[in-house]
Image 1 (cartoon, rainbow, N blue to C red):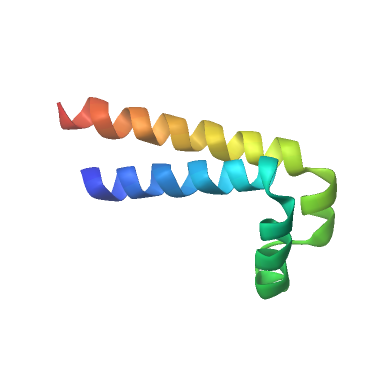
Image 2: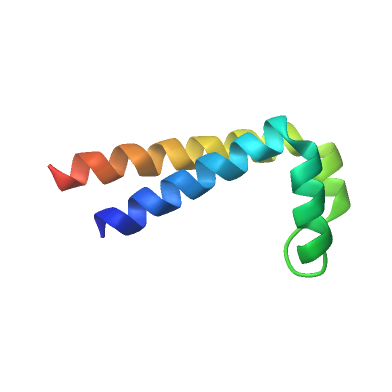
Length: 70
C-alpha cells in the first residue's frame, strides 16, 4: 500500500508541475487524450488551478504515505 500511495503522490506532483511549468508537454498529452479526459479550455484557462490542485493532492498523498508506514 505504501508503494501505491508513493507512486500516486509522485505522479500527481509530476502532473501538477507539468501543468504549471511545461504547457507544451501537457498540450501533447492533451492531443492524445482529448476525447477521454482533457479539454483544451481546461489547459488554457484553468492551468494554474488544476496544477495547484494536483500538487496539493500529491503532497497530501506523499505525507500520508510516510505517516502511515511508520
